[in-house]
Image 1 (tube, rainbow, N blue to C red):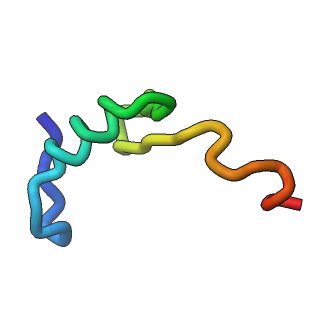
Image 2: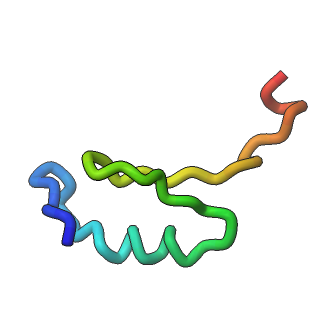
Length: 48
């Protein structure tokens, strides 16, 4: 279980579960941070 952030004001577990269930979303494997990423979120034209 992840310790709740006192500044957040809400439980983080439902957010982690929702993001983990989404296709294309990956959790970055790090013990110090809960970080998710989605490859291809922005297309090349937008980033140019």
